[in-house]
Image (tube, rainbow, N blue to C red; front, side, top):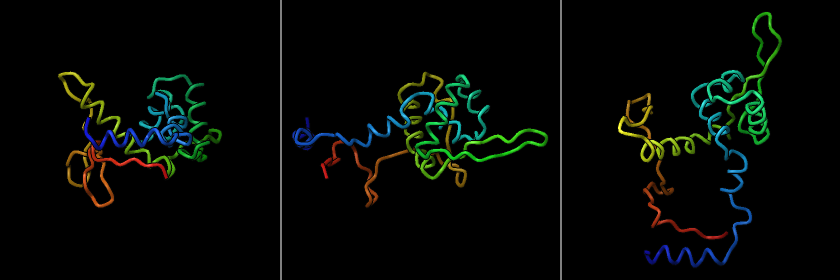
Length: 156
């Protein structure tokens, strides 16, 4: 093991992750149906029936998960009404929800790189403005790409 990582592991034993941000995030969005609902929102879904149908979950599960996502501020319910129909609500991503795009993209990227067969990934995500492939990476505020071995993790 590299000396830097040994130092991080030694430091890790001096503090607990009682208020771990990863734990809190997983409690809020960390199950399959919730992440797939987010996927559909990023693809443009807004209405309840779209979410349930596209994710392939029961209406009861979709309702429960969407309610949880509204409660944590990922979605906002907005009323709409089709002519001659009762008022219903659609689910619109908030800024908090849009901030989850890199998370979803990172999971997609990892799945594309490690879980696809010989046919390759089913989708290709590109930048509309230039056509280049979109990918997620870890960078510091100075713009450097930061590999795992160069991360410093410290308790505040």
